[in-house]
Image 1 (cartoon, rainbow, N blue to C red):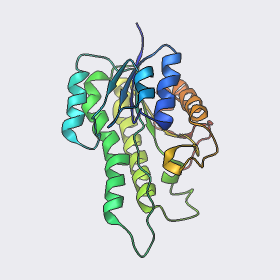
Image 2 (image 1 turned 90 degrees about the vertical axis):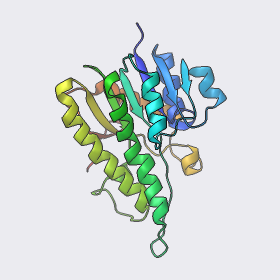
Image 3 (image 1 turned 180 degrees about the vertical axis):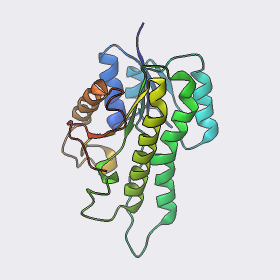
Length: 221
């Protein structure tokens, strides 16, 4: 029987590249997104579109659709990057990033807990910009704070889920050439997906809770 992976934000960018990777690796891929894409429809075994992971009723619909199934790997990939300038900070923008980047992954894990079994894994796609120790340039208040919160949530999830045999990782994909950064990144989504998949493969209960770059570098909190 095929292993099953659920990927949020799977319609483009890193999420789509991960969907393509896991299909090629023989997995059953379930893509979750607000609005599907032709590329995702061609790749995924099933697409759950119209799912906004910040909306409790949408996440509940996803959980209901997956009721009775086993999810071997959950990748919380959906995210939002915005900038705020000191002196004109947009708190609504910060709040929105917190909802998407931090609260939504926790909401999805909470809802899908019945589908996760011993041996399942959770990968939270975070950012090294969520590292407080690594912040040497300031700015990006909402993005930094939301990814730092996601890292904290992920660490707690790792502790709480370890007795159930479920491992959790916080993974920075790298500076990826996606719409989020106006395609100005250093590596392709496919390269990022390869690195992320390698880190997931290496994830165990013994190293659960870590914060890694997709290239394998352990990142500071």
